[in-house]
Length: 491
Image 1 (cartoon, one colour):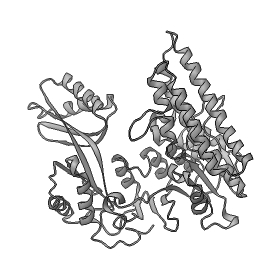
Image 2 (tube, rainbow, N blue to C red):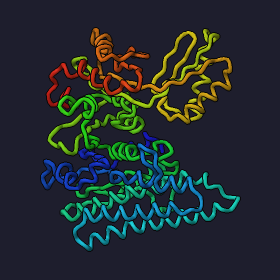
Image 3 (cartoon, rainbow, N blue to C red):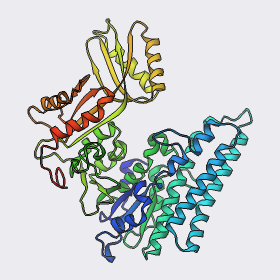
């Protein structure tokens, strides 16, 4: 089924919103209940809202691996250890964590028992699957590695199933006709596409009288994590919004989409953006600061569905509205963002002049082969430098591959950081010189610099040790000098 075919099926009128609740917000049920579910709602308009939920904060780390440190969770232990049973211990610890969370939310013993029983059944079924697979793969004809993607998908689904079931049960206790919508495909006999599974689930839902609480993980025939890995819940959220023709898609986070990281520039200096466009959202994603995954944003943009990013803990603020056609009426910088842990791979070859396309093709092939993410690049007559967001092990593999194809080239690797000034319209005379001046005043040397003709971002490559100072200096010079108030542009 194509996207166009799916969206031609009339499901519900465009009265409803589809809203995603992040894991950090999900942990604090009272805030979700008071600031999201009941905020500003009369009893008659509690409905016409769909909620797609993430796993509770920290759960997916325990299931897969820690996002920041890479420390193994159940999946990592199962995939990387042999015959020592440590994944079983990790699963036991996870089960205990599920139970502790349940005790935090359910005061009624009967409801607590129901909540424990639901997640226990899932955990024990997963345990049996892993044990059977481990046993089978001890036979020489079966390779564990060929099954690991499926294992990862199965384990990831436990987190969202737990949080969605809990939230629907808790809201039912509040008198809301909440409906647990399980897209995880648990015990499903059919393999479906993402759109088909969503369409099937929503075929019998009446949004006027029911409040769907939807798992952020969706089981698909292709495997949602193969493309999106930990960003899978955003794709579920986006496709639910597109297929049900939502009037607005809303993401509830524990922070605003702000002009810079408040932890760096100070709570009093960072200001919500208020209004921006999907182009800016894509620039942020390129720097690892996703408002929404670019592929998830694609469907919303194509169907002209606005995206709003709100702070769960400041519900009275309208947040930031992202649309496809927005351009600031006054050119300005909307956000200072960046990324540490960038590796610059420079290929220098005196004979490159006139054949840059061939060298660049070979380098790009090597980067794609090892799945490196390109943040930016620059080219001179005899050199090409790609700036990659990846780990050192991958960088070394890429370097070796380039050296094998071009043994006469000199390949240099350097760890750097990238800091960007981003906006929907930055056609401000002298803005580049202001930015360079701000970095110079902070005694920061610019290693490389890029400004696109579209005037939506400027990128500065600097030594990693200067990252914090660069963000502060650029924000002070390009954002804080303006008195933006509650938002750069009210949305």
